[in-house]
Length: 133
Image (cartoon, rainbow, N blue to C red; front, top):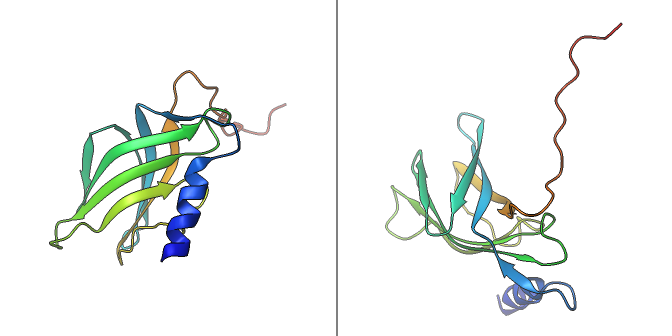
């Protein structure tokens, strides 16, 4: 357990010289393994979203100044309506989702990126229509 915590701390420190900044929000992805439905959520800091049995709250989202769209560290509190204790409370890391993951038989939740509006987000391309010509 100590090794895992040490690895997390070293990861949160980011690349040498990079400043860790706070974001206004986060983009998360949730998979309901029973239905196969995948849903993306944008949450602002302090905001929560209930979906199915889970309530997900964003406590904080951080990112390295030199890699605003490529890395995210989100502190989440996830409650399951069928459990007394939080299903998850801690940091999730976008580039290493298995390092600190929600352990739930029905749901998977992972961090995609922090909400960094001033940064250039990767472009998405629409599928080509028809075959042309």
